[in-house]
Image (cartoon, rainbow, N blue to C red; front, side, top):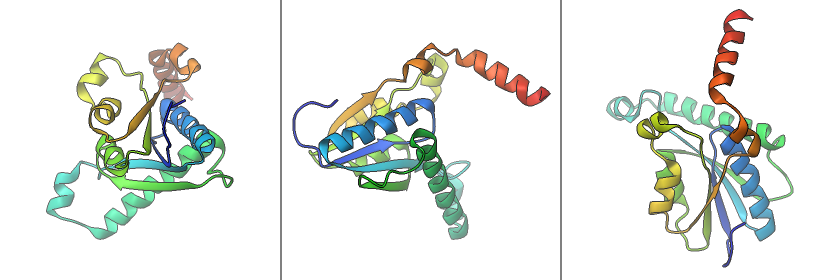
Length: 172
């Protein structure tokens, strides 16, 4: 739990991973405890990146991408908690941009809190992907709560799962 001070808005980054779903559950518990509005945020970029879309913008495609992102956000809620709760104020947001930048831009008040899940990336993943946690901790103007992966995810051998899952897909 976050210590000290009043929190009125909580922003949680969501993308559907196990760590992200665990962060979503933790953010909801924190929002309920503090009577704060919870904003669940899924940041998205166009397939293939922003360059092509900026050169040749296509409004219809953008609408489809936003709709897909919203579907993915709702699916994350379904996976984490069986759906968006109706007993606490929750706002769903899909915003275009890199996740760290989006979360840090939205949470722009002293009484905001950003909740992010700590991933389990290895050295290669850390070298090739931006860290949302590092970005938010370094640039956010509010407090940042980092939620470690759930115990089961920490004990799980992801390489074994990938091999087994791939084997099942190919043979099954």
